[in-house]
Image (cartoon, rainbow, N blue to C red):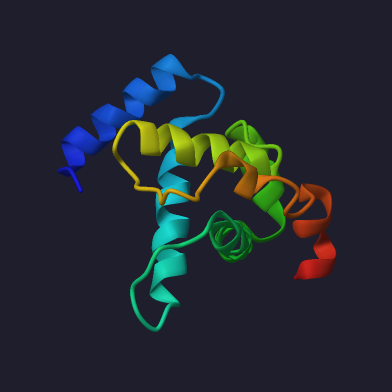
Length: 121
C-alpha cells in the first residue's frame, strides 16, 4: 500500500479522470474491504460478491436507513457502480485482483431499493 498522501493523490486523479463517483465512495469501498477482511478467519482474496455483501452490511452499520441516500449522493446507484469503483482502484494500483476477477462479479447482486429499505433494520 502506498502512503496516505500518495493514496489520496491517486484517488483524486481517479475522480478527476472518472467523475462519476465522489471521492468518498472510494474511501468507503476501502473501508468496506477492511470490514470484510476483519471478519475472515485468515487473510485471503475477497471475491466481488463477498465484497458486495460486506458493502451492504457496512452501509447499514455506518448509515442505517440513510445508507441508500448516502451512496446515491456519491453517485452509486447499483452494485455495478461498485465494480467500476473497484476496477478504477485496481487500474491505479490501489487494489489487486485475481485473474478470474471481473466487473461482471458486481452485476445483479442486490437491488438497492430492497437492500437498504426499512425492513432490513
